[in-house]
Length: 146
Image (cartoon, rainbow, N blue to C red):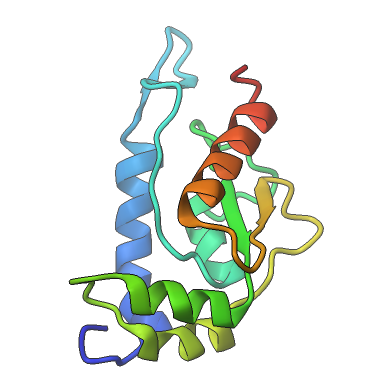
């Protein structure tokens, strides 16, 4: 990515499996009956999860979302030009503006059946701080953390 070369599905597979193991599976204990119980009520991980199969890998391939630690996603619905602008404004980040196009091309928008996805619309001219506040508000609201 530092060379402006997008990762392939194969590049991502082992990383997604390891991330699922680390965040979802290893973050649980078992109760007296052997039923998995999350150790921590919430964890936050950031990654692009551009494709449905990547999100499924993080879910553990569980279509009914009954994994011990429930996974939720925040999808930033944003125009490519806004992404390019934000990439240009980042200083010292390994992934530059050149990767935006390939990321947008690879993107699979969440399906209507992906009920664990919180969609946040990002408007032109909206600053990063405004986006962060909107994401936090939506996550708190939808996860019942108010």
